[in-house]
Length: 417
Ligand code: GDP
Ligand code: IMO
Ligand code: MG
Image 1 (spheres, rainbow, N blue to C red):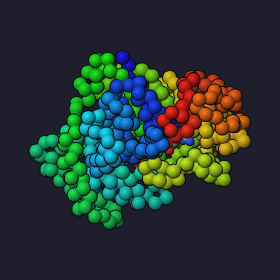
Image 2: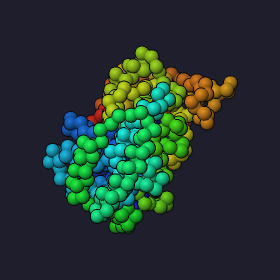
Image 3: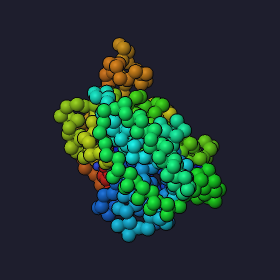
Image 4: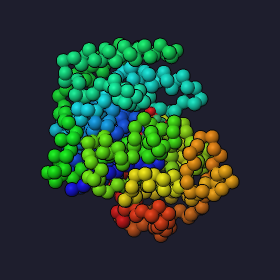
């Protein structure tokens, strides 16, 4: 058995949640390997919308194990809220959810630090979701972090106070007001509840499942262009979001990785600041936002919209070793007579298909080809000819097969090719 991976190839929000939920039926274990509550993964099941932030998108399928890996950072308050919301659907989450002991915890002061740091940056702010992601990963790599296993130890409060006091000292460099007390109370109450959930050591847990022949699906968060090493730095998140992170985020050897399913929208979006060469900061972009309902699932912020960027996708297919592509939101382009496809950039007087090192200050102009759109179609139909030809074009450009096209937010709106 191999571990299959689903991840986003753009700047996040490609529709990972929907595709994981659809495919989860074919797996026994669904495991998140990085990121935290900065993620917002939307599932639409029987007409009802669910947004998940920390819990893997297999939670609505019976008899599946949903594992939050050691590479994830957990906000106890958000996680508990998610659990309670899902319980309202009559699901006993405690029977389906397992948490890695080594997953780092987001403290209330991590969130305050995130907000204070962003506020101090003014115009150069990252556009963080302000969920405390950056400061928590900083403490993890700085070897100061608290982990889920620690909440079961008698000295947890002592460790907490030590780290909190470090944060309070750090906060003195910012001119930022906050009220920690109510946040702390809510946080400790959530920690108390989370003690009831099963915790495991990733390496033994996941490898034993694999040895027992269980089918495992690893669920990514964010997107490859937000990767801390290979994304549009510094306008990125604070974790590795690529296939390599499956190994470090779950305790798996590289040789265990099977299919890598990369997801892209039929166009492109980005939320927050940073380079976005194919952005349409005009009425066409607005039309995409309206047709695609492009507003953040976590923060509600309007997403920046533009046409698909094939050079960027070529780059992210390469770094991830994508074996299968999924194109989502094909239905959104029905509203357009024709749409753009960026096939190269104009940069430094040259035409190139490579992403330049400095995407922030460089003058990069996308070269677009325009393609005809298609009429409305159902997921029970064959792909319209113009869409099939767009799929063929992408396959050829990226030298990777497209295995699915999604044409609606609902679980069943998928055409398998
Ligand atoms: P994720 O973070 O990658 O899971 O994606 P989000 O949930 O943040 O954003 C994707 C949005 O598009 C959600 O509102 C989904 O319900 C919706 N969605 C997913 N696939 C499709 C599709 O094929 N067509 C349409 N119209 N909406 C889709
Ligand atoms: P999903 O999993 C889209 C973006 C933020 C910001 C930058 C850094 O739903 O695809 P952070 O909170 O990590 O410090 O923010 O990354 N970002 C996302 N954008 N989808 C996400 O997750 C994102 N998670 C973070 O908007 O620009
Ligand atoms: Mg999202």
